[in-house]
Image (cartoon, rainbow, N blue to C red):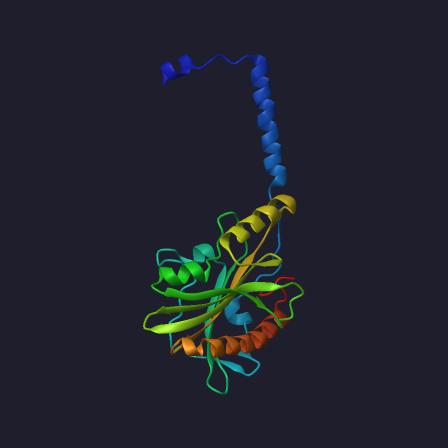
Length: 238
């Protein structure tokens, strides 16, 4: 260590002063650009605040275990999310829709919200079909973009519809989310929150997928309206 110190070039007073000035400037920028406010202005408890009856849909006991909202069993949900919810709702005709919500109050560069694109394959499901989807008729003032997908695993098919809201926009990829978080952090000095809104339906085969998506959209209309009446801006970008 002493030999290494002796090999270092001498630093003059002027050079040292420059380094000090640069360091102070970097410190000032780091402090001044650090986000100092949150996009979210509410604290919720999903079990208490999310209605168990929405329109003609009523919560029922889950017949099929839901795919976890983390990509592996070693990842603790409470390390990523501030709140999660998994329920199943049914209507009078017997249609069932599984709902999964995963919410994080602070989104940083290490994106916390895990996409179904990662979670399903990580838990043994094979992606059969995926397409971008704009969800309309939800009452949002800005477009809601997400995906509709079909997976096969655990001896059944599962039709999935989802979107992810980060701050005031919906995102469809990890890169979009990361860029949004960085942009709002630097330009708006704001920490965005984020939520995954996922619904899924077990189907016998691929011929039932179109009907499953239609049922999910009917459910989402009632579910989003009921939740947003109590907690505006939780599920939808605004």
